[in-house]
Length: 240
Image 1 (cartoon, rainbow, N blue to C red):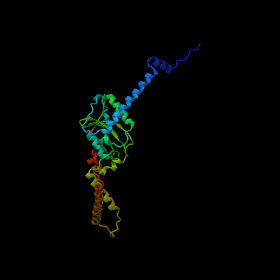
Image 2 (cartoon, helix red, strand yellow):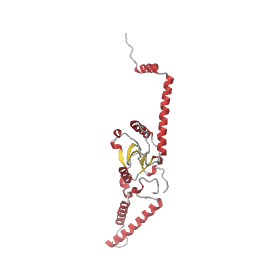
Image 3 (cartoon, rainbow, N blue to C red):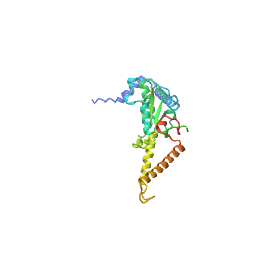
């Protein structure tokens, strides 16, 4: 006699039917979904209405990943180097990915807390800034330390640090204008103003070129309310 093989899914189903009725099971599942939806709505509400800069979360130290803990000084340096902003999550105008909500729930479960005081590091263009490419979501630990919860989007352009170097601070910008003026002066044909260009003529041309480029830069800066990265990395104003 050939023995009938055991079908595991059928056995599980039979066992479940003995334990709980189908209707009760569906009600339980619906309640789970309602609870999870309510929890995610609460997280989104906190993210979208966060306005307090003096919040810390009671993380469990032994459950923190060291490579995700950053001091405000480290964050400031990256923001200045790559011309990014580090602002409250309430100012973030782009849509938060669902993966970020999942990461928040995972951290909350691991530490048995409700996170608050979220901050986001990203280019100014993705924030709703007042008039005066790779976001990172942080939660404050305390004493100017932050815990990286999630990052998403595309990585920054590999040349962004170089391209934003002139805008870090005034000294960088003046050196950039000096170098740019020198390059433009060298590109002027030597026979344009005289048959033989002397060293004095070269420096006179360079002086006028430097004045012209600097004047344009100042005009552009005032017109569009631009400032250096070291001054705006944590500013909520577009023209700070």
